[in-house]
Image (tube, rainbow, N blue to C red; front, side, top):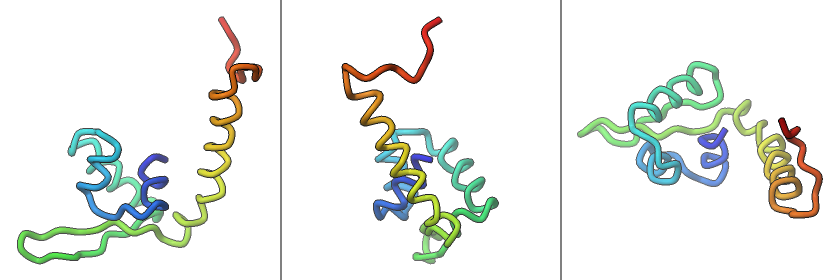
Length: 91
């Protein structure tokens, strides 16, 4: 979801995602492959030598924007408000 969030904010290139998310290149590559295979993103070449691609949200990927916004609002309400009741039960 964080990759999709960053793509909605305008990130398209591998290094942008890696820098913003601070994850290993191998993990990021696998997650991007999964998103492409699921039809959430598509690869678009932007450089030939060395070959480089950018990752662009598809229509179904862009349709996730309301979900990402709702998750942000939920987090702001329940995780940032010290008076809010926690949605996560104590054990």
